[in-house]
Length: 132
Image (cartoon, rainbow, N blue to C red):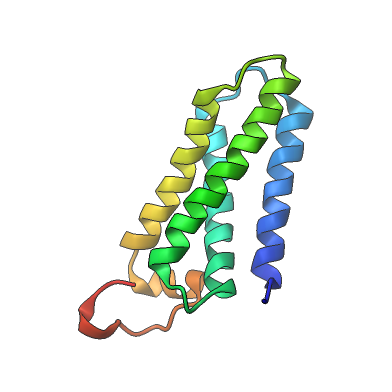
């Protein structure tokens, strides 16, 4: 099991998100901010998953990224909500999920020449002309 630099980066980006959101504790942050935070993290997390389990393939990496990202986003939003004395703020969690989902979609539709370095894919088309 190889964690590697992408895994370390994914962990660090998530920790930065958690620490900054809890330290700043903005009562009403702009929606785009949480979407952007989790979008950036999703890029790194997907790259880490692709390098950790290359044999699994993109059809596993993307859902795992969404599930893991969604669960950790819920944990962070829950901690943020409790710190502000609020019930769980579903809108904040949904903003994080949108950021994660946008990256999952981009990982599917971007040209292979862009996805290959990001996901550690070979730079040739797959058999049958399908997208990885």
